[in-house]
Length: 201
Image 1 (cartoon, rainbow, N blue to C red):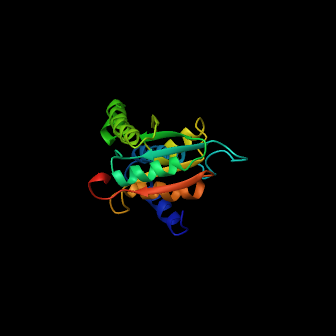
Image 2: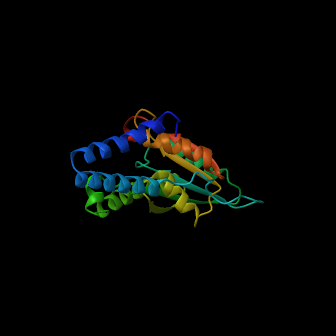
Image 3: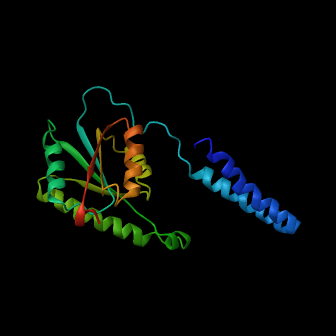
């Protein structure tokens, strides 16, 4: 966090609590409790910024983890992935990962089935497109956060290369943020492929 942001955060927490106490002690206690809950929730959602994935030592079979936030049908991108996989000596394992993006109302209602079905739909389209290009791949649904989904998956699938497929920076802000964080933290080789136009939606 930038140093100048800290006083603003403290003020955003303290001013409403103090104002509430001025109106009524009961209201002040309620506002203080709400602020405390908010701080705990934010702290719990913060992920450690350590390196992601295991140390790679010695020759290993190539494993590609392809993280997608949109169905991957763009022929040029499919061919680029097929070429990457095809250059691997002795064949390669490919796993496609799609986050289950949960809407605000669905989160409060604890309804994740719709998000999982949409993620599975993206996976079916992508795996079929890869199969047409001669790439055999498995598919998994992951956490709604792309970085967390990749981190979770690397615990059971030791990828040598992680490929993140996103829309352009203007169209896919979440993908841009995820790409920056993965580029800094991944131990495995990292590649980003950017879709544009209709394929990115």
